[in-house]
Image (tube, rainbow, N blue to C red; front, top):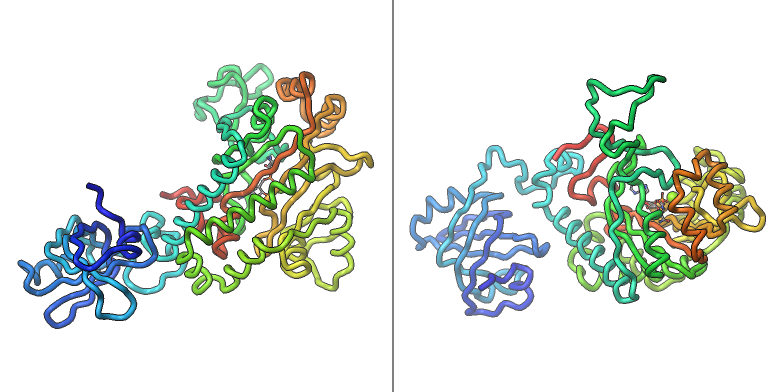
Amino acid sequence: MVNPRIAEILRSGQPDESLVVQGWVRTKRELKGFAFLEVNDGSSLANLQVVINEDLPDYAGLLKQINTGASVEVVGVLVASQGKGQRIELKATTVKVYGDADPDTYPLQKKRHSFEFLRTIGHLRSRTNSFGAVFRVRNACATAIHQFFQERGFLWVHTPIITASDCEGAGELFSVTSLNLKDIPKTENQAVDYSQDFFGKPTYLTVSGQLEAEVMAMAFSNVYTFGPTFRAENSNTSRHLAEFWMVEPEMAFCDLEGDMDLAEAFLKHIFKYVLEKCPEDMEFFNQRIDDSVLATADNIINNEFERLTYSDAIKLLEKTDVKFEYPVSWGLDLQSEHERYLAEQLFKKPVIVTDYPAQIKAFYMRLNEDEKTVRAMDILAPKIGEIIGGSQREERLDVLEKRVIAQGMKPEDLWWYLDLRRYGTVPHAGFGLGFERLVQFMTGMGNIRDVIPFPRTPQSAEF
Ligand code: 4AD
Ligand code: MG
């Protein structure tokens, strides 16, 4: 028999039920003749209150062993609780301690710790209320994503992590090599001789699964990827990771309008799902982390996103009295302060900006008739800035070849990608959602390092 988890016991446990509970002790309170333990097994924010009576064998020895952080198995009977704060509690008949936790050295004593401190104990922080709630919500977001696409007949495709192409063309690549770094083979011109490397050419960790997702969309019509991506961009901000998860749908026979409609429906679905599955955790974020979390969720679900072109966004930014650190003018990329001004202050909801200048966007985006802008769209969220980046793809072979060359890439390196335009090309579109930015947006967590279990950032790869 599988023992019920604490979440289920708290939801539907009845007095007189006999149970076995396994978990970690959050607190111990000793009173005259008995003690209370708060036990948590990660299934919910709330703990199960366990009552240990002094008539248990070796009561004193047991209590000495049980401190915050200890792992226990409690066999007992559920009783209606006399105290406030819980409906039921577990009256212990036996308690087994798996492992104790020395109160002099265990770092998670009962008090509030800063997120900075908790980052230094990344192997233990998931045992706190905040990180428990974050990772349950993260799990619910992932489930909602699969549910959304599966219900709509999208095929989940697995794209490679090691690749020879730089999808975004931004040069933020981590190299993958099996060459001996102490004795790198060189060619006659003193360049690295990659013909001797594992794959016979330079390879990298992927920055995006998009190019391969396009391949699969040209056979299955609608597909999505959900996997890790890597960027060696040296940005130490609260919204950048070197390793993050991205969700990338790709749709054949789809234009930018269809792409935006899907992205908006997608975000609404995830918020609805999480509110339904994790009400207690979401309430916790609203109370403890950011008191606008529930209002934001409501706003996302019930209001249409604002849509405007990049050119109109620039006009609005030029008109405002707000002083920005970075300049605003047509042709320059929007900085996070501009994105946040639009979403947070001006429209007070997510904003979809379309038709960016071609020169600041990737080679694969479809060129507009003005030949200056491309069919790109970024979704900007309050507090986060860019949460989704997408586009209609260039399906015309001649135009795409010119764009590849203009961006300093070699068409022959992308021969297979160009072949998609040679054989049965169709209008198609897709986008990428930064999964951690979504979890930040959902929970109100200020730092992206605190929504992924093991963050990878410049100078930091502990745990
Ligand atoms: O805008 P990006 O670079 O778009 C692409 O990679 C496209 N190939 C997607 C597509 O059309 N299939 O990245 C997509 C999203 C961003 O909007 C952002 O949310 C997130 O990925 N992102 C990051 N998240 C965390 N840390 C980083 N360093 C990120 N860089 C991008
Ligand atoms: Mg982008």
